[in-house]
Structure formats: structure tokens, C-alpha cells
Image (tube, rainbow, N blue to C red):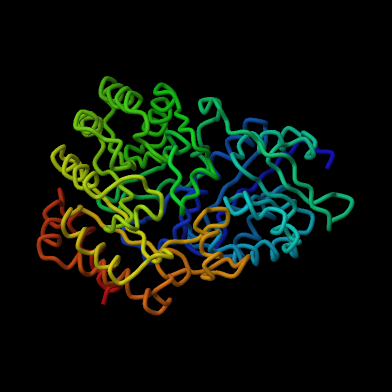
Length: 476
């Protein structure tokens, strides 16, 4: 495609269900204990890159706004979009493509693109099987967005897969784009396009946004998309750049609660300490959450994180069985997890832990080990996910080798329901595992009372009651 400057870009969270639509994290929200609606930060980054080249952008989170496909068609027409970009998930891919087909049928002149980790491995087949799509992004897409808006010939844009203009059946796959080395060069997400009031911290109800601090993870767990999406080298933004975005959120949008999103926030100890100390030095009155491995923390780091506003840390514990941890390549052990949870508690920071069930090696014994370990380490929040075999991961390849999936099969169930059987347990046998584990943990009297006593106001108290009742209905 010759390429021409683009004036109007419409970025869309399609009305196909509530998901976290981040390339590494594609969690459905409806039945989750800990997952709440987040701003579509990847699309906000894309919008900022389009705007950097002079394009006029609009962004709508249709499920977040409780809007439907008819609203989407009307909005595209009213805006006069030249390009529409959809944010898709792998579990919801078919539904997303049904919306894409309806857009193309109704508005054939609009160029229709999509972003999502799905296209890192399934870009060509996605275009071949879905004629509504004109192009998809692979890898880190911000530079490609800017180049499209500038009018660069599409054949020269790295990381772009697109339909040949003279032969719609021909799909052109440009070379991969290297990961962005200087993350400070990427413009801040275009939060002015978002309805920021939609995105709330679940306990306090205050506005919360996602702030990406670093990309890439040096570990290689079999189920995780981080290496595919962001590489194995942990690339950090400068402390100054992050603080500038925090101050923009505070001063322009009134946002003081943050999810610091990263593939591994605590990968670099000195960087974490510098960031936390600079937040304190500037007197920024903010609260934030982050993730961590259990083996990348120490007491000094936790103290500084707490002083800088960190209120909760999410740990991917994954299993209470050492055998399972070894199978998935976690490269840690249960004793280290015990130590990390103890350090976090002593620092006055809450802990949220994640278990994965439904892996190929799952047995009744490993499921019982999860429940026993959750009670032992006693986190403040527990979430249990069913493992999802994303294409391109070692888990997907293992599942196909073991006959748990057919080659090319893409499960539609994800996280709250089994995506596949294990070698010892059927889908039916696995289907009760998540609810059983959550009931076993959350119906302990001390967990109920501890959670309610954490409330700092009537609003928080009723938030916890409402939240707990919603989850109780899921368990029973």
C-alpha cells in the first residue's frame, strides 16, 4: 500500500464482553474475584502515537460504557473515521471478528485493523480467515501507529501484516520490529480520550489508572506471554519520565490511584528504590499497586515501596505444589514464597496471590496442595485462574503434544472456566476446582472479619460487603 497521511483514527474496545485487553493479560472480568475494569491503556498508547503524527483520534470503551454495536456504527460514521483499530483478545477472538465483519459490511471504505498478542503468531491466518481485517499489528505497535499516520508506505512499516491492495487474498507480512529500546521516547497514553471515571479502585471506589513502568521479563514460565509480547530483557522507563506521567495524571485528570503495570516491577532493585524515594521526595500523595516475583523483594525495598504509596503487591505464586512449579518453569520454591508473604505483611503492605489450575500436570493432589498452601501463607486476597494455552507459548505446544488440544484449536473458555483437561482430570472434574479453592479460603471467619475491618470509611465498608456478596453468589 502506497500510504498517505491519516487524519481520522477511531480506536475501539469492541462490545463483545468485559476483558482486560492488555496483550499479556487478557482476563475476562465477570467471574473474577480480584479483577476490575481497567482503562484500555494499549489503545491509549496507540492513540498518542497516532496523535504524535497529527491524526485526530477518538477512543470508546464500548463494554465499559455499556454501549452496543449500533452505537459503534453510529460513532464511526459521525466521526468520519478513515481507520478503525480494534483491541482483541484470544479467548474472545471469534466474537471480536463478528463485530469486525459487521463494521466492514456496513462501512466498506473504512480501513479496519486490530491489535493484540493473538497476532504475534496468528497474524497471517487471521487475515486469511477474516476478510474484514485490512491489517494487524505485531509486537510493540506505537512506532507503527505513528508511521501509518505519517503516510509511510505500508510495505516499509515493521511489525505490520496487511492485505495487499491489488489482491485482497494476498497477505503481506513485513519483518518484525525490534523492541523499543528507549521507552521514554513513547508518548504518554492519551488519557484525555478516555472516560477515566469508568475505572475505579475496587475497595475505595476512587478513580484509578494503569501506568506502564517497565516491559519485559527475564523468566520464561511456560504459560506466560511476557517474553513474546515484550522480550526477556526488563526495559525500564526513567524515574523522571514516570514521575512526569504521574504528575500529569494528578494535575490534569485528578487521578491519584495507580496500577503500576509491568511484566516484573521489582526486576531491578536500584531502580525501584530510586523511583520510590523520588515519589517521597516530591511529596506525591498517591497510592499504587504492582506485581512482583517472590524472589525479587527484600525488607528495605518493601519499606520504601510502602512509604511511596504502595498498598498491595500481586504475586504469581501459581501453585502450592513444588512439582507443579518445576513443571511450569517458575524457578522458585515454596519456602521463598512463605518468606516473601511474611516480609510483605511485616512491611504493612497487603498481598494478593494468584494460583493457576488446569495445567496439563494437574492432579487431585496438586489441587489440595493449593488449598493447603493458601491457608498456610494466608494472603489478604486470593485469585484462582484456569491456565489458558495462548498460541506461541510453551504451554500451548505442550497441550498439543499431550493431546489435550487439537493443533490450531483456540479455546473460548478462559480463566474462570477450564480451557482444556489435564492428563489426569477431565474438564468436568476441573470445573469445580476454582470455586472450591476460593470457598475454602474466603469463607474462613478470620478472612471475612479481617477484610471488613480493613475498611477506613463507610463507603469502603459497603464496597467490601457488596464485593463479597457478589463473589459469594459465584461460590455457592
